[in-house]
Length: 495
Image 1 (cartoon, rainbow, N blue to C red):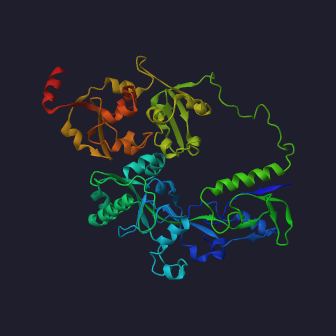
Image 2: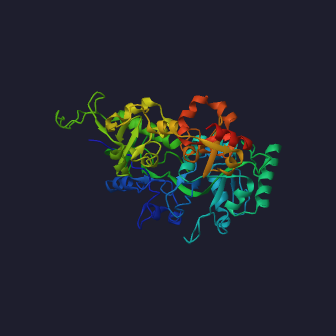
Image 3: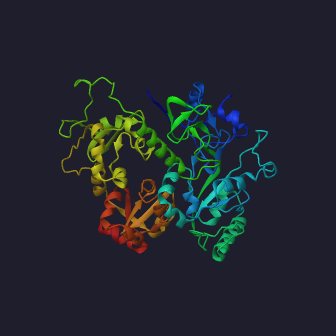
């Protein structure tokens, strides 16, 4: 028999007697990107039957883990991917000053961050007294940087980890930094970009903030150094066999991934973790003999079959749909069919929240923003019924009929300008004013592309990317027709 250990590292275990306390006690107060599973159980089990370990003191610190404003003290952080710095993200400290080459190695940027602690520059040993606060910093992206990293920015914004601000002054107010200080920092950065090098040796400057900083759109998140990867673990050979102290193999025991040690040396290169899993997982998988399955065959009566597309389904009124409106009982209507997505939500690649927010309602609009109708074939197993349509003249989606029948009032340009914030986002498109506050959060291209048009006529920019027919997607959000001030009365008289 063979056992494969792929249980990960130990960076999330801060309990007494943990591997982290044993090998790097000074890092116990440091947050980590590792999941709750990362407690070193696999390592402990292997050691109990004679396996040896190596490099256990080598733990990688990553410079940018997001601090969630809603839960800042949570020891588990979401990683702020290096891509954000690669596209032009700028790091500043709490004084509003840059302090490093943002494109430097993880070890370099982390050290520059930890140097903000008065003891660290001398000892190069973090938190010896376990009572020093881990410093935090701000990661700032210009609008052009956010557009280049739009998929990442969209995800982080939805999670509340990135915030959007229009103009340097509002950004400075949010960061509690004097506007003059922040302006000088960014102007110096622009000058360094023009010269091709800065005081930290940075030579690549992508998506530099525009000269008109008062009109620039900024995205910002708070970041802090985090424990990211354990280079140490159980010792394996080149075939993934777990080794004993005397150099012999632990018979039938294999390892792959972060549970193993010695693969990455002193500090892992970015991207090599997944590569390690693929390489050693593949080697071990090919070397282990596969026998016949010992599982008893399932009978016809207990084998769960997918729902047949032709199987009859119940017709359900929207009142029945509305009852199932919670995370534990989540029904959603999509294109006239009702699906029980309670269990699917937690496995949804876009996160459970985007589905649970639609519980008990018609989610067709939001589904169409991201997916094609063909995607519904994958949800066939979750189908529970068909949404009842009482009026046969209604279109498939009730909100479409509602939008078609809604009489649009006149909206002046002055009124449109009053709704110019991300939390109150009206945009005029082809003569119609839409309240896109909610829709912007689900926009496939990112919320910022819509929110930067708040309070304006966005027809020209819309036309660059979309045909006019695309407005079908947002017609439920129509609030009125854009008219010149003197034309309001004439339009009302026509009605």
